[in-house]
Image 1 (cartoon, helix red, strand yellow):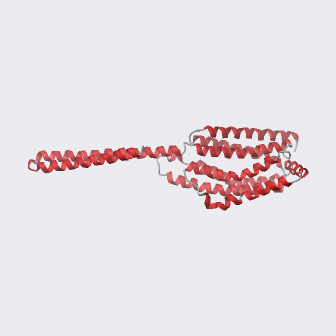
Image 2 (spheres, rainbow, N blue to C red):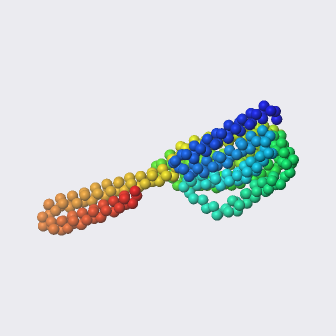
Image 3 (spheres, helix red, strand yellow):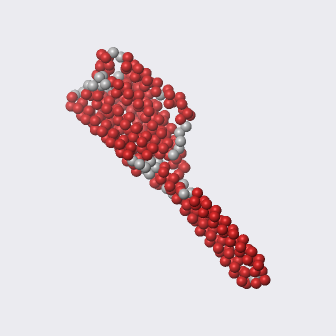
Length: 311
């Protein structure tokens, strides 16, 4: 790899790293839908570590600060759970983390083994390990990336189920056009393709041409996270959905009050008209009017209690 190509790749990785840090800060300071945005910010910061790692590799400093590479690869195994947590906050559907406890624990074993192995290597072997990365990715590194993609894909499938469940729940609602998460389902499918198809193909390709791998990686991640940032900021969040639900309930109560009052008042009017005509049965009609008025009063108190309870 020529020095000019190396400089370009360092600059590209640096630009992507700066972008992702800025994206994360924007998400952290956004007030609405804060829980989902905070999780996404952490997700972006962790993934930004790959660009820092690339900068160290191409600058020849990776062996000296090899703990960065090991830390980044270990943190990568948090990306799947973080994405699932982000999806959970976006959909409002809680995740039963105990359901797949084995997945949360076993997936970290390869990362832990990688960290231990690299920490035990002599300095000379560490230098050779990272020096070869610009020519051909080490087999150990490729295997770890394979396990990361495999684990990430499982969490993506889990997340996709939550999104479909959420979209089915609100499909009949009036606010479906504003709050549906079809975009998140589409993005999750694309990420699945990256984990199970594109990334493995790039790893194979990197055996013969590392430039393509290191150039495509930052471009791909930047496009994905620009899209995620835009959609996350635009999405009003579950708080907004709750406001819409309360508003719909209040509108329904208002309609019910209007219909019920109109019906009961009309009934009282008819009884009063009948009382005028039936002089002999006035007492009975007055009794009926009194009962109807009491019934209307009870209904009014019920409606007002319901209305107050929805505030």
